[in-house]
Each structure stands twice: as C-alpha cells, then as structure tokens.
Image 1 (cartoon, rainbow, N blue to C red):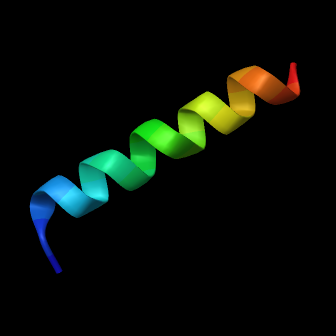
Image 2 (cartoon, rainbow, N blue to C red):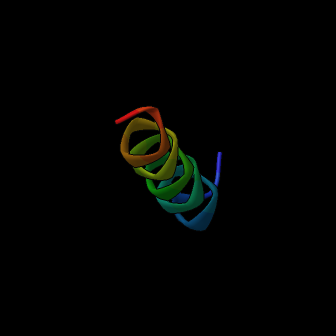
Image 3 (cartoon, one colour):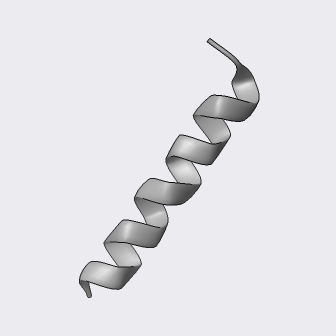
Length: 21
C-alpha cells in the first residue's frame, strides 16, 4: 500500500461527497 495511493483515495472520496451534495 502506498501513502500516495491512500491520499488519492481520500481525495476522490471527498470529491464524491462534494459531488453528492
């Protein structure tokens, strides 16, 4: 598991949450 990969996953999750709004 890469730290960058986790960062990207978190960023994508936030984007999805924002898009859901």
